[in-house]
Picture 1 (cartoon, rainbow, N blue to C red):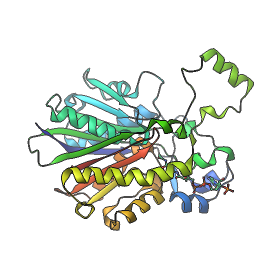
Picture 2 (picture 1 turned 90 degrees about the vertical axis):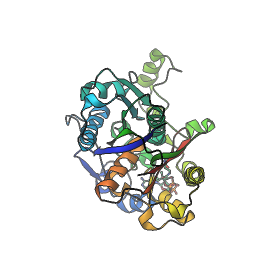
Picture 3 (picture 1 turned 30 degrees about the vertical axis):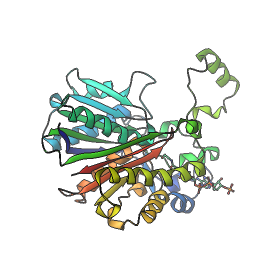
Length: 337
Ligand code: UT7
């Protein structure tokens, strides 16, 4: 058995910064409401013609991660790509990334677990490395959400929280099994699938019927993300804690032993609630939702990269990645750095 070591991290966000104030031009909202309810000050959104899409942003973040790892795309044995906003309905974005980076004809797996996507992707990649099947794996989270949002007042409960961006992590095989990813927890509860979902396009509706429906009703909202915000919030604060405790229990650790929690940046109030319940100090919790909004599957690798760049993660630290989101899905990964 081997363990997985993180040897490179990278992030990329589009240049365009969208402030809360800018959003007040499109919908009835305010900087005060958004800051108070979500903690968000601004987010980055792609703009037409800037060349950014889900795969290309992933490529930019990956090139940085690869350079920091001292590897080239030819050294990568496998790609795990987490996204809820793939470039195409099919094929997945992983194959586009394989081509953009110029990797060999390696396997590329798309993970469709929304906000928990990076937690699932990490767990999957770790299993391939532990078993000895692959040596170097690129694990990526990338999202373009802005192009799919309802920017009218009707969509304000959802649209103000989401941002675009990408994060990447290079994992490599290590002989020291006392380090690396020590535990994972992965969960789902599909009975709540439609509490946070985009329902259309869907193969449940023939395309011909769908086109007719849109032509007859241009206000069809099923193309936009729907979120039962309060309901999601209440589940999130419980599941975040459970997932953290599950990986800690598996490793025989307590919240006091944790050096840094990298929560999926869903809402600052969710992170603060979880911090309070687990009695974690401010320096044990990493938040950057203020600058990027909620970038779903990209939020953990973006935050992990930023924490590492700021020197917040040192050798031997216990770090936890934890997420909850659409599905519902949730989970956590515990790593000894
Ligand atoms: O990342 C994946 C998982 N997602 C999450 O974890 C998100 C979880 N949910 C949330 O973060 C929060 O529920 C939201 C930030 C989405 C909403 O915050 P909230 O405190 O739950 O607000 P609410 O939906 O209960 O709405 C409160 C009021 C409503 O007005 P009334 O009915 O009280 O008059 C909304 O219409 O705020 C209104 N409102 C807004 N007002 C200004 C909703 N969105 C906005 C807005 N600007 N953008």
